Length: 68
Image (cartoon, rainbow, N blue to C red):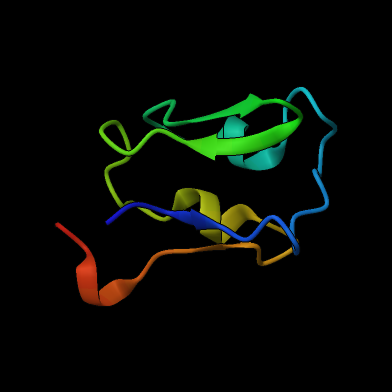
């Protein structure tokens, strides 16, 4: 399972181009598409760096489905 972004909670910290989650993802699994952050499933390695850094607490990782 990959990081899940709750778009209702996400306030696009850092702006539309480079939100914090995009900056901190070590695998470049998060990008901005159509003005919102999107996780690429096959690249995400469930590290939760994005969730830890998100000031809006908009990113979660379903721990029951972590693959590491």
